[in-house]
Image (tube, rainbow, N blue to C red; front, top):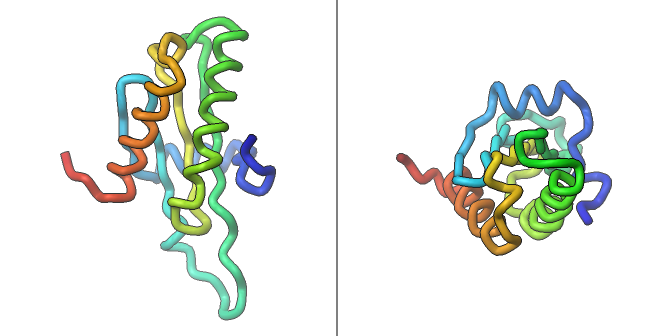
Length: 123
């Protein structure tokens, strides 16, 4: 489970990450990243933690399938949240193919998207 301090909950934060951030797409998901490195912090003040949120629409499947995809993505992000710069906003949007993808496929797609965003892989 993703710890509470790393959860993205406010609509404005989702909108900021999607509209102003960079994105990397894979067959089963799209990852949006608004890096926190650009936010200046006062001296002595610690940076806020990276926060992640998930968007799984009805196009992915019924309620059971959507919840299964969300649980899998939260579990995968738990191990990867420390890879992002402090204060980053991350939104993982599941595509319709995510409902049919197994855990390993979601992990590969998430890793590839994160690598592209953080590694600066141009396309």
